[in-house]
Length: 265
Image (tube, rainbow, N blue to C red):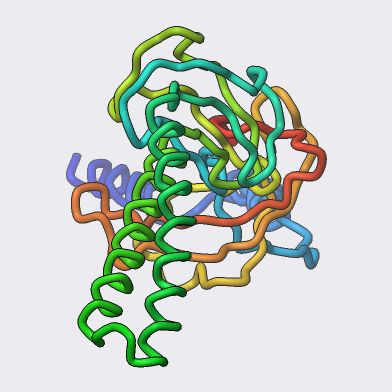
């Protein structure tokens, strides 16, 4: 019985630890297939391309010059010489206040001026002949200077009744009519210079040292994708601490007044 058990145990150990011939034949093809497996690789062909360091910012078109027109004195409007939307030249008369009293006073002073000049000439001739005193001649001279000063004052008051264009530009919608009584706080109309336009925009503070005067930018307008070009002419003196941005302005020559101020760009 002992001999049979020992033989059986040896046979089982041999089958467990020694590979059989059939098993080697079965595993061989699997090992060969594993050695021939392929690895999937993602690839990208590198090609040169141009990189542009640019930023896109929204901004606003502003007039080169703009003013709210009003009279320098109070009075009733007697004439309006402009049409709304009309292009005017610097110095052109736009409106007039009633100056009848001032004109009458000015004519009176002019008449007195003639008499005073004649008196001064006579006093000077008599002084040369020692027929009058130096004091009498000086009194006539002072009277002449006083009259001239009064005439200049009245003439300045007459000019204040005239509203003239301060620069070349387009007159906007008027706010008054002939017969209205106005004072210095009542606007008559706005005048806007549109031959050149400013573009105002803000950039992040990291670009503060890059946007210098003379640099060119391109822009388009809302509803008009035609590309236009302008040049930076000034930047703000400091960064806005609330928005951390720097305000920049560029100038655009506006041929034919194609663009109007206030547009979004």
